[in-house]
Length: 77
Image (tube, rainbow, N blue to C red):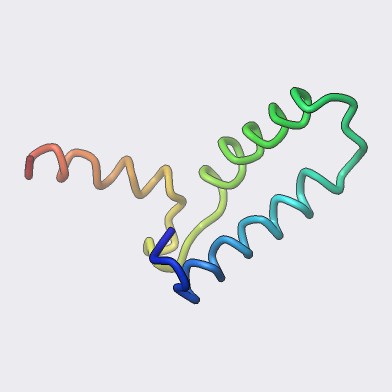
């Protein structure tokens, strides 16, 4: 995320984990660690990366931004 002691990096991490806690961990009791692991990965891949729009990315989701930027990056390399 950033350098050690960086307030911006800490803020981003805490925001992410607060969303994870609210949207996955606190939703129901989990019987196994594997069940919870699958729920976390599913939430990150289906919701966090694909639906959550970011102001820094021009109101695009991370997946939309990567799709747009990948051809330009490949040409630059």
